Structures are given as C-alpha cells and as structure tokens.
Image (tube, each protein chain N blue to C red):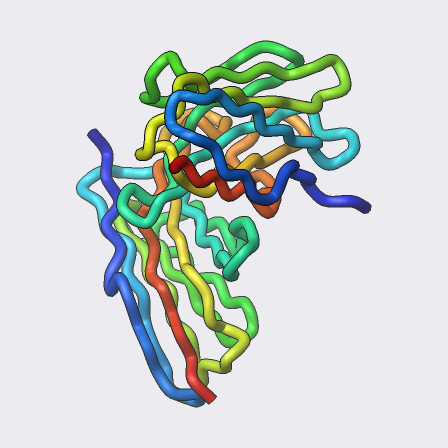
Length: 113
Length: 112
C-alpha cells in the first residue's frame, strides 16, 4: 500500500514567520500535487511538480520535488493570516486519472496576526 | 464560469437510512470523481466517472455507489448508513480523465 506521510500535522505560527511542510513516501511518484483547503471549501490545486529536483515558486510559496521523486516540501516565507488552511499533498502513480492519486492527511496551518 | 456545484451542502441522516448526493461539474467537464474526507483518514478516493462509465473505484464497501448522467452530472448514493459514514463528501471534475481536477465545496453528511 502506497502511503504519503505529511508533517507536521498541525502548525500554529505568528504572521511574518517562515515555515516548511513535508510530504514523504517510500514510493516513487510520476508527479506530486499540493493543495490548500480552507474551512468549508474544497481543496484548490496550488501546483504540480513533475521532475525530480524541480523547484516551483508561487509568490511566497516554494515547492520542491525530491530528486528520487519520493518526497516533497512546501516552504512559506513571511506567512500571512490568509495562508491559514489545510495543506494537502497528493502523489500521482502511473496513469492519468483521479483514481491514481494518493493523498496525505494534511498539515493544518494557522497563522495568527 | 461556474465552479463545481454540490448539493445539498449539509445533511443529517439517521443510521440505517440511505442518502443521495449530487454533483454538477464545470460546464464542458466530462469526468467526475468522488472523495470522502474525515479527520482520521484524510481524503479517500471513492470512484471516478467518465462518459457515464465508472472508470476507477476505491476501496469502499458496496453500500457506496454512484452514477453519471449524459449531461455529466453525477450522483452518489450511500445505503444503510453507519455512524462512520459521517464525513465531508467532495466531488471533483475535469475536462477528461486527468489527475488535475477542480473540487466542489462538498456535502457535510452527519449520521446520528
């Protein structure tokens, strides 16, 4: 069974702090997705990383895919209250459909003003 | 452009009853997937439909079923509800079978 472990499970920080969230697996994925889910809403896709070692930036968010395509990290610089939410990673196994996604349980981030 | 619409948003049912949830995908999207989200298990894949055919199915009991109509709208049904079925049920749509999809706001089901 393929598993994606996310850490930490919960994170509470002050506005302006930096943070890193991790997504780890013993399995190799063809790509990896990161989502943010706000309370009362569905997840929203932030980014997909495809190549081992790839780094993508989305404003203050930096996503990295591990060289071996088994792990990924999300770094947020100068966090803001608007960054509050549940961050989910999803590994894509071979194949091109939703049935090939493995989701982690998420990191719940709270950014206090 | 309207997003994925799920109805109802909230539902309270009694153990043993059955329930039907509805999902209208983004206009033009032909693939619809369903997920169950709970604090303990996270987001778990239920099934995926494309062109009215179930293409993939997750590891859930037969009490969970679904269908897709010719206009791509989808419904999922849960029979003989159990307390453990209390969850947020999410629907996601994509143009075709794809790993990238757009999620709806979900239906919060509470079984008492």
